[in-house]
Image (cartoon, rainbow, N blue to C red):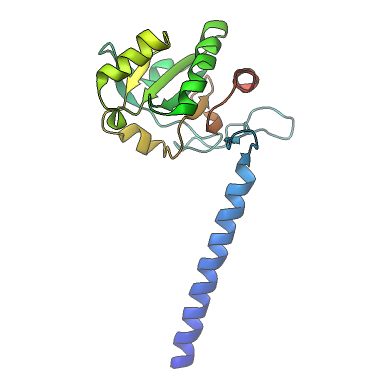
Length: 199
């Protein structure tokens, strides 16, 4: 009996180790580290012809998965849903006023918004801010942001999108599928290049 229990324990431990290795390798295959600033990105899902490929119809956070819908209020009090923008290229960007890389990235996002056909939903991690006045000053006075700024007052949307680094950006194609993810600040040229890959 002891031998059977030991064998079952050994098989269970071996299975957990195997799963951990598989999971780690799978993450490594889907992400790459950029030495320039610790940014982690994912490339668009593509088929054998190099065309962007929607891998799944299910909602998820991986490349080729349907981006989870979200609904938040803007600084102006307007309700905005991601699904409202179906048919448009969208960048869902999570940021905060106290985040230095976010401050560096915002001018490039504004430049992209001004020069390309893209919608940007800038989701402020409002629960982490000292006050709404700080956010308003940042948006209107300091950076003169003209794209929608949404307020995630309970961090519900940040949790849904599993935001672990600031800023984090999801690039969503015209059909609502995630085709690129960046954890960390992007520069303008990278934004432009990735945006041009979206359908």
